[in-house]
Image 1: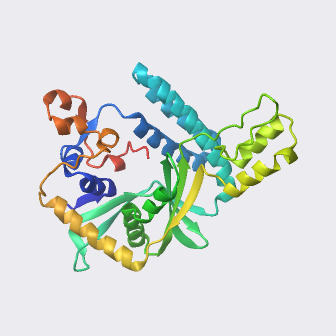
Image 2 (image 1 turned 30 degrees about the vertical axis):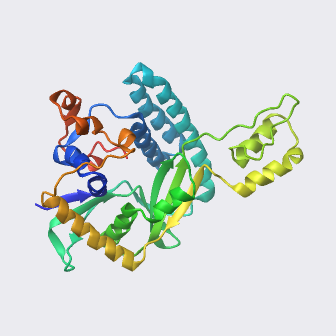
Image 3 (image 1 turned 30 degrees about the horizontal axis):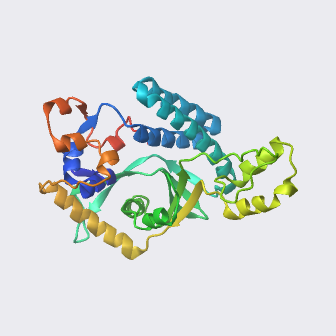
Length: 328
C-alpha cells in the first residue's frame, strides 16, 4: 500500500519535525479547537455554501456553526467568538457583492479530494508514495483551467502578496492538477479577504460625515452613509473619488503563475521530501514566535507528560484535512 502525503503533512514537517511527529506519527488532535482555527474552517465552509446556495445559505451555515463553538466555549472566550461571528457575517455579505461584480469563471468542482502518483527522480511513478490534495475550487476562465483558493488575512499588503509568489502549496496544486486532469493549468487565483469590517463614516457634531482621507472603508459603504443621512453626494465628491481610486482594500484577487521549470522543480522536491520523511528522519524542534499561536503541541513540546496528553485525542484518520469530517 502506498504511503499517502498531503501538503499539510509536508509543510508541517518542514516547519517543525517535532510538530509533525505529534500530529502525524502520534495522530494527536486537541480536544478543543482554537477560535482562530474555528473561524477559518467555518468561513471556508460558508464560502462553499455561498457558491452552492447563495448568500442566505452562506450566512445561515456560518451562524449555525460558529454558534456551536460559542455554546461549547469557556466564558472568557464567548465575547471574542461573538465578535468573530459579527466579523464573518459582514465579510460574507461584502463578498457576495464583490463576487457578483468580479466572478468571471465557471466552477468545475469544489472541495473534491484527488490522489496522484508522486514522480521519482528517474521520472517514473513511485511505487511507494502518492499525493492527495483538495482545491477550494477548480475553475475555467477564458477556456483555461485555473485553481481558485480563498485566504483570510489581517492585512493585505505587498509583503503578504509577495509571499504568495513563493507559496509551495500552489506549486504542488498546479503540478498535481495537471497530472490529474491531463490539461495545462494556466495559474492560480487567490481571493484574499481581510478580517476587518469597513468603518462606517462618523457623523460630525457640526453635521455631515467625516471626510478623513485615511478612513478605512470602501466606496459603497461611504456612499450608502451619504444616502441614509439625506446628504448631497456632490459635497463629498473628493472623498468618494479617493475611495473609488483606492478600490476595495478588504477583498483582493491575486494571480500567481508557475512555468514548466518551476513545476518540474516542485515535482523533484516533492519526491525528495517524501523520501526524507519516510526514512525515520531525525526529529528536532524549531521554536519560533509563531509557536504561541500556530502550534497545537507547544505544551507537549516543553514537557511531554501523561497529564498533558489527556487533553488530546488520538484520531483514526492519518490526514484530518481529508477526513470525512473535513470542514474546509
